[in-house]
Image 1 (cartoon, one colour):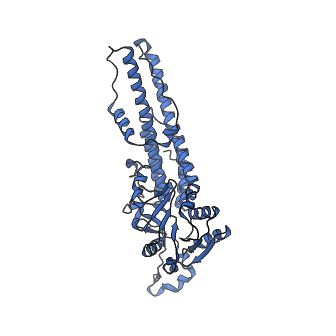
Image 2 (cartoon, helix red, strand yellow):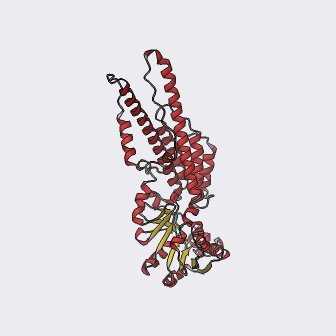
Image 3 (cartoon, helix red, strand yellow):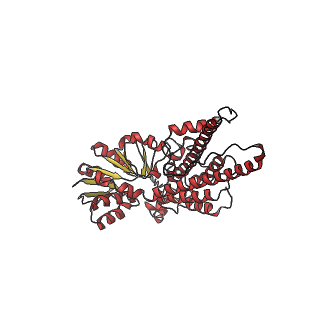
Amino acid sequence: MPEGHSPVNEFVNKLKKRNIEGSKATAKLTAELLRSFISQQRLPQHNQAAALIDAVKAVGEKFIAASPVELAVGNVVRRVLHIIREEDLSLTTDAVDGLSLSDESDNEDDVEQNDHPFLSASAVAAASRNALRPPSLQTLLEDAPHSEAAPHPSSSEGDSEGITKSADKNSTTRKLKHNVIEAVNEFIQEISTCHEQIAEQAIEHIHQNEVILTLGSSRTVLEFLCAAKEKKRSFRVFVAEGAPRFQGHSLAKELASRGLQTTVITDSAVFAMISRVNMVIVGAHAVMANGGVIAPVGLNMVALAAQRHAVPFVVLAGIHKLCPLYPHNPEVLLNELKSPSELLDFGEFSDCLDFGSGTGSPLLHVINPAFDYVQPNLVSLFITDTGGHNPSYMYRLIADYYSADDIVVRPKSAS
């Protein structure tokens, strides 16, 4: 990775300063920067995929270290690494098929000729893995014909063969980068349209005269509820305000401005009001491999209340929020502590300092965590871009988007 790559350094600084709000915006910017980074890479003649993977891992480690609690960054990095492996496997399989066709054609022309090269073990293994793994979307959409098999050159055609091989290597390098960039473009499009894809399913889950409870503010939840309203569904929404940032206030105003019957309640009133609710619909910060949810603080309380009163607890999450990690992973154990000023003004602390000790150490401490962990047994249904899924199925869905070799990408320890 070029040390002076300014877009990378600028993005790292933005992550460190928390200048990017929201998992969707962070994921999209990460994917766009990785796409630009890949397009500028000069790959060697051999092992292009390995070189590209190493380069992406190096820059990805910087991104993850800049903001470990923003799990969407690591998700995008791992997803791009998975794309590189899939496209390399697809090109390898195409090469295997081309050699096989060439072998069959030569055998038909000259049965007595036995000096054809055998396929390498790695090529055969790659073809076997591809048979067991579903092809990527880019592979399915791509309609490029296999290159025709060239006849075996004679000894007098050595120079021509060298030129042809060099051209093929350059073509393969360009092909790998082109395919990866196209697949990343599709991934960016998935991130951009995740709200719309999830909102299209609202009519299947929200019914007439229901009462929906949510907490805080989520763009995905907003679009989901408004999509049901546009389909002539009549329902009521209870919005828990989401202290201490009170983002539920802005969500309630937006829902009311779009014609939805909205009621704002305090967070402490959730247990008192949950018996009147038909369904809880919330957003998520990240979805773990075991089906657990990293969510805005306060949602675990709502989930417990919903379980106590047998109310379905539905989580909306885009594909970029599916995380291949488990709750015991170090990255997941981290919790972001927000400013104490959201609870108390700094001026109020002056009365709580112990000046008698000479150190001025505070007698009052403020802890303001940003996230809760909701266990998978508290979740009734996940609604993603690809449809509704049970928590027990999330590990299988995540396996389709990530490679096992890339899950170990971790932030570098601070020097």
